[in-house]
Length: 338
Image (cartoon, rainbow, N blue to C red; front, side, top):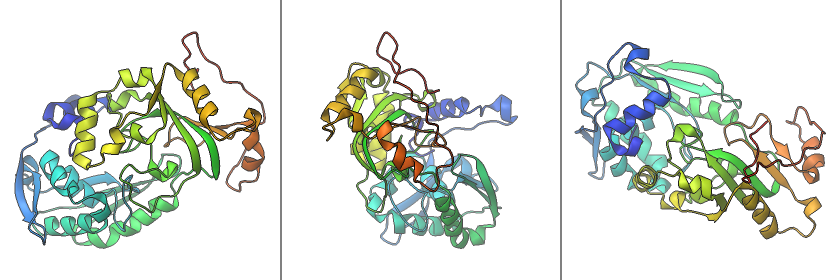
């Protein structure tokens, strides 16, 4: 898992447990170690590392979700090759490759993957492709010699099916929660159009102000990606595990993702402040979008001003016209997503 889990073996075991992956549930030992061995070398002399335990095995079966990456664009992004050279590289390998910068990853990942595949035995690899509803859509089992040629096809399929926000102009985007289980960058730049890497090629709505209200439990305080928000809450900041977040951001070389935006006392203050500072003269015409997270876009809330825009969207199946006011509890927290 590269640098996840605060870049230590114990932290990575804890992350697995939150997903129900334990020795008891799997019926096999979980061997977590950050030790690596030098396996191959890039054309410019940079060493490539792999997990020591994996290298001592008879073979390595790669398995990963294949999807658009949150920080760069290329024929190969998040998937089997990235799992091989970044994930299995542990903290040392991940840090080394990230020093190339995301603007070079479109060539670094394929080259690193190819050079490592020449040195190891992969009986087969499993690529998982999901649809726009975060559901498993396709399982691709590929032999070692075909990984380099077929992974770009799997990525193209994933890109055709990714969920996006079709509304072109938004005054205030309210994101209920962010987390590493949602996106590698907390909130997916493929949805918001705001990558922490600053690399081009990402498309999204024209958003004046983004408000993030909370962290998912599964992210364990790693709020990486919060730097792409404009406004957040004191409650979220108090739950941040700065060690995990800063380690993640430093390893990836995307320090902007770990910066703290403007902090308001509670959800209500954050939303009110975003509306006061957005380019709006008439509050009744404010273009507001409220989503649970960037992975769950099946249902979204929009303000009255956006209703005609949504009704004209070809991909909007149903528009429920019942008006609903924002509801806050006594401490100013926005009531849970209905």
